[in-house]
Length: 86
Picture 1 (cartoon, rainbow, N blue to C red):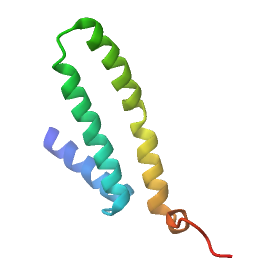
Picture 2: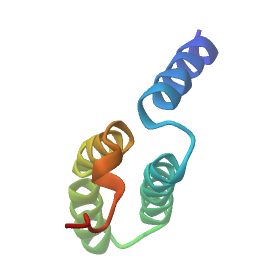
Picture 3: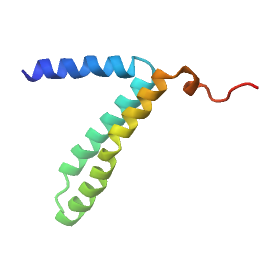
């Protein structure tokens, strides 16, 4: 069952984010969060661990915002331009 739910999530991401630069930016941010949590799990000092978990959780809260920004970019060609010509 987990395989099919992951497949559905990947299809939804492809539909919302496309396959271009915004998809890669979103995926890179998500992978970096995964790596941060992997590194934090290896910390043995409880005080340092608790502080880093708080910081990592604050970063994780940003993931929906990053996804929303990347979806807005894919949906609006004008949003992708750096400067409009007058």
